Image (cartoon, rainbow, N blue to C red; front, side):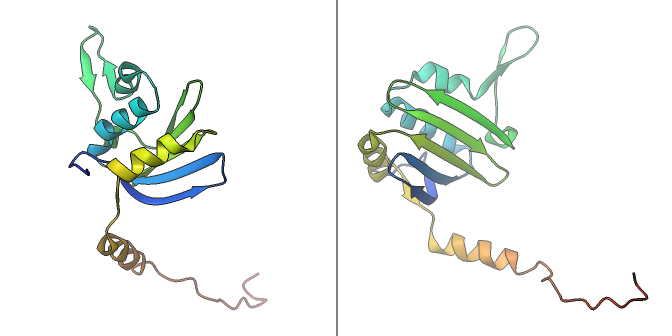
Length: 142
C-alpha cells in the first residue's frame, strides 16, 4: 500500500548488480528512506542520524531535505552497498547487491511512480531555455 510518506520514483536502471533509482526530492523522502533501508537490514538509528546534526550544546537539530545538495552518503552491510546522491531537484540511490529481490519487493509495495503530468511540466520548463544557434565567424572577429 502506497502512503503519503513514500519514495516517488522518477526512473530506474540496472545492470544485474548495480541498481539505480532516481526519486523526487521532498521531505517525505526522509521517512520513506529510513523504512527502505531498514528493510535492507540497515540500522534504523544510523539511517535516521543522516538527517540530524547537533549544535554546540549537543542539542539535536533536524535537517531539512533541502539542506542536502551536491552531497553523497554511503552505507554498507553484508548484503548491500548503497550510495545516495542528493542533487538540487532529485535524489539518486545506487544499490549494489546480488540480492535484488528485497529491493524490488519494497519498491513494488511501497513506492510510487512520478505522474505523467509531472513529466510534461518538466519538459515544458526546459522549453524556456534559449536554443543553441549556429553562428558564422568572420575572419574580422578572430
